[in-house]
Image (cartoon, rainbow over all chains, first blue to last red; front, side, top):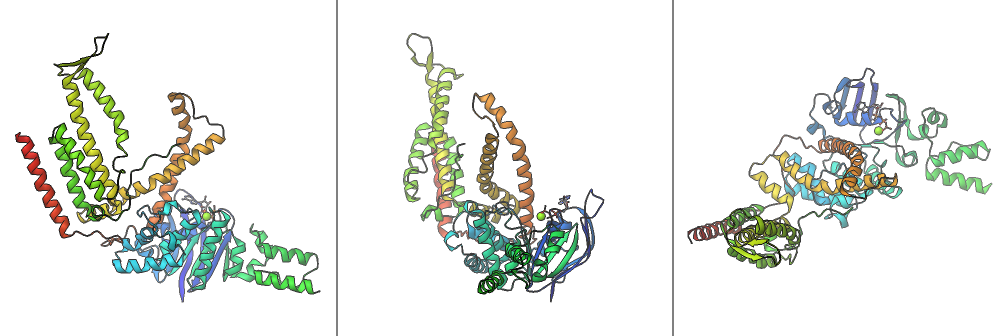
Length: 283
Length: 258
Ligand SMILES: Nc1ncnc2c1ncn2[C@@H]1O[C@H](COP(=O)(O)OP(=O)(O)OP(=O)(O)O)[C@@H](O)[C@H]1O
Ligand SMILES: [Mg+2]
């Protein structure tokens, strides 16, 4: 089943002549985990914003083509309607906190309060979410006093609690330290294993290599490549062409290949690398 | 840079904490009106009544802590009014070897104002310290205060510490680039000017990001809102409101007559 469908979608910010997203066609199916990578300024954040409808309802500009999420037309639907279908997570951990809650629990409840969900249901879902993100010990703490990684987990949970059909994350770890990044990716991995439909925009190719099903490369407002994670992330020439650094493991196996120590396909995951090391050691 | 003192709710399991915010708000308004009607002696009695209340609320001395900020105001009040009160008649004391006179009427007037301030301050504090801001906003929303106004009040309270942290970060960054924030007042104020740019741009950027994050959580949804925190209006709330109003009116009328 198609959850998200772009049909010839183009977008031009008001005051600009050329579109920064150009005639995009893209379909994402239920349960898929799609990673999005690309150069700085390729239009990835704009694409993420358009799924929730911030483009065109928050940013002014010229919208062409169609975006359909879960059967709903983005251009003609309200932001509040779209927020029940699309969960969008942003970069900044602190700026995503609503400021309406004194505790993590209250922060998580905010979206459901806005939707007028009954209190007993809110309590139930808040409890589930706190457990899911593993912040039981912090549930009554002030979210502004948490670490960046913990805040970002709260941000993810605060949109997941609204039970969206697709979770879109725009560089959720870009402002985090390595420890915070690990916290957030552990959570994302958990969500992926639950079969939640995810579109993740990130520069962290190492992490995408471990668990993305499919990879999209954006370049100059277009989709430059779209395919299964293995074929794209191990295609070093393709990645280099679009200014993307391959994952460390792929680079390692590529170097081994150059030195004629390895002649099989390049490694993608830790498992591949283990097999490679075992085989090389045996010889 | 010192952290500004943010007076905020202190979680305790007490009878006063459990009262409906509107009950406490009504009582606070009664006390403030009384403070204006009563003279200094009666106001001191009203002030003394805070002792049992702060005991019941399990806050002990927290309610009194802010009084130290009042002391400087009192000092200014007493010296200015004591020396320059416009309706001065009776000299109270002449400072030896000078002709500086302290006037009785001025001192009485300063005492009146001080006692009022004292009462309003401690009761105001008791209210703030025992009332969860979210509950207060919820209660006011039930009285038809617009949802968005409530949000602005709440988020301002919570976002202030985050702006403070930002100011500290910017100051640190500018200091490491050689900004000198020492010296006399004028010098210091001037040194803070370069901080305003980043802070302003940062705040606008932050506001844009927060607005988008709010939209992602159905902030503008057009429906009846619900609330995670519950504020109940019990029978005892009603009784306390009735009792407070009756007592206040009686005391106010009596002190008016006598
Ligand atoms: N609000 C805006 N108004 C005008 N132009 C914008 C706006 N936001 C982004 N742009 C421009 O649109 C282009 C694409 O930006 P976008 O943020 O979508 O790219 P990105 O792939 O997310 O890049 P980054 O790596 O910087 O996050 C850039 O040239 C950018 O300058
Ligand atoms: Mg971006």
